[in-house]
Length: 537
Image (cartoon, rainbow, N blue to C red; front, side):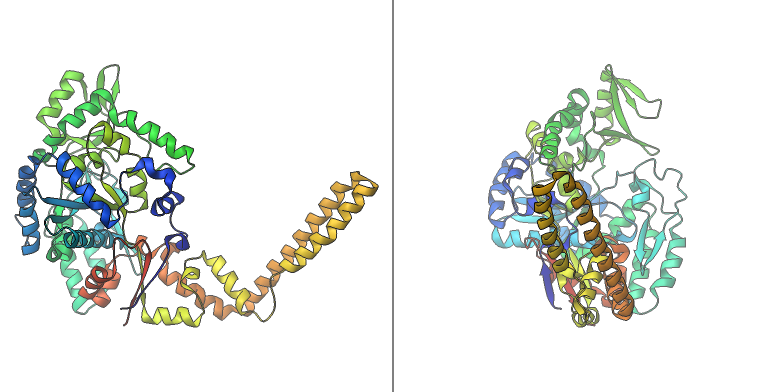
């Protein structure tokens, strides 16, 4: 399978903050410790080994064994779980929501990046072990973000019958109602060996497991278990108890708000968009029915939009008795992850890295080692036929990523048999008016405004003529324009990156296990380029 690439700036889909981070712009140095070059991991290993509470390993492996007790576990995954007991074992983590049937393609890219980085680290540091972790976002409660996936341009949506949907953590939601989605999916995916495998995967995940956490774990394990992926749901009280001191500090001292506010100001000062603004308390209260934020007023604590309240002593007692009921939000979850795991690096998308870059001061205040931050791999999957069509249309890879009107205008100008660029005429007009400005200054400067108005009017007239001529040429070259638009629409559904829209099943039904194998072979997590992967058939 041929592979090509373009730089991230050429895609026009990544923010200035992420592009500057990738180019290691000096202004961003205060927001992270080490850039994820392979040679920088040695220092991270040393720091994390000294900083991590290795007593947590016992509870971590015990919980993982329990969570995997009803799954078929590969030898590689079992070895990785056992290895976590050793002080020379470290993790690389990616996190993701429990999207229906994995959601968009980039779910795969995240995990592939994570697995491949652990392999590179093992080659570089053979005396240590490196375990790829998928941290399941079981405590998120935004159901509308995860209850669908897109296939062949159609949206397959789960209308949950669980009345708690949208109110409490998605991980505990009942899978009832997904049989209806399965029927529609099975009809859409058609027949053949790969299609039958996909149907079986969906059916066993959602119709044979009672909650979304177990269903998602089953899918991720089926796809990536043989590669050693370890899947963790971190809501267990045996794990949450290790976060009690940090949750207590949050409740009493609002430490995350105090230590990220100045960082947010710094990011604003550099004119980047801030991804997340911290609250005064960045904890939710979680039970079977609700996940609502905790608010402090005059020494009392309240759960938003409920009648639940505590004194300071009462909420600290609740924390000690039931740590699993205290759920970190987006600002605190990274700290919980790094407290819990012997982690070296977090791999995420641009939005995730943007909020991680807000957190270094908070980590320093809590004396927890800040992980290295790596942008996940991104890719565009093409068939050989689509790539041949792109070449026949004389569209370069960077041009393929342009906004559609820009791409079409550029190609129409290029293939037209007349010159649609009126730039020379505009430049000549500006030169002619310059002599008129000089004349007005010599005679009566009150005419300068009239001259300027006439110049603007005539330049506008030329622009309008240029647009009308371009429009006429588009009509004349209608077939060519339609082929360009169709190719781009196929590769960029909803005018967005394919990886943010399309479900993996659209490609798996064609390529089966070759899809996963080729992603593992072709996606290098330390290669900071956007990959274009071409499938031959």
